[in-house]
Length: 185
Image (tube, rainbow, N blue to C red; front, side):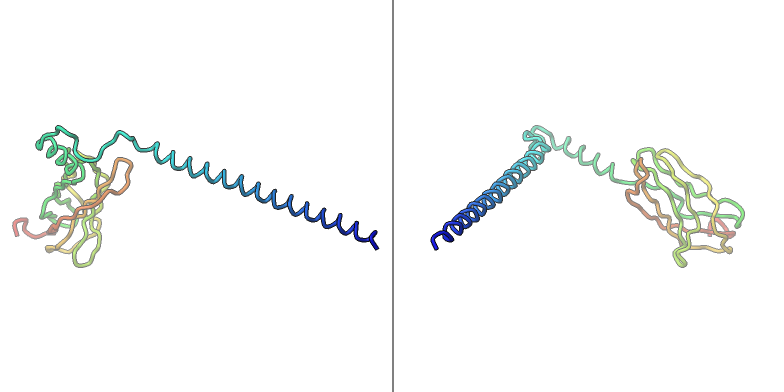
């Protein structure tokens, strides 16, 4: 009976050694994954730190006068503003003739713009311009929709665009459209 006991012990020993080896392999894999994770986290942290200059300070540059600070702020405000110009009353002698709109994109603007004129009561677009660069103007316009004689309330929408033609904002102005009535009415 002792003969049967020895092979069982060898099998148990082999199974134990196999289990130990499997556990060591799993631990080794986990250790490698942990090291990869630590290296990845460290690299991400370094990338973020490298982006910002460690010598950069927050606030106003020491030694700047109040006048210099005001000029810098004025320049930022000016860059973000859109100055518009259009006649507040656009007169059309009839449906076939052009009306004097005097749409101007002043030279100091930083944006191109397009202009849409929309009737206030129906929301119909009665005029659409193409792009107008700073320093350009459109003196006379022709309506895209025929209107009967009379006076109409409308809104001129100035849509600002960046140099790569992405919309940057908009400004609106109320205008009157007069068709076939006296210009001074």
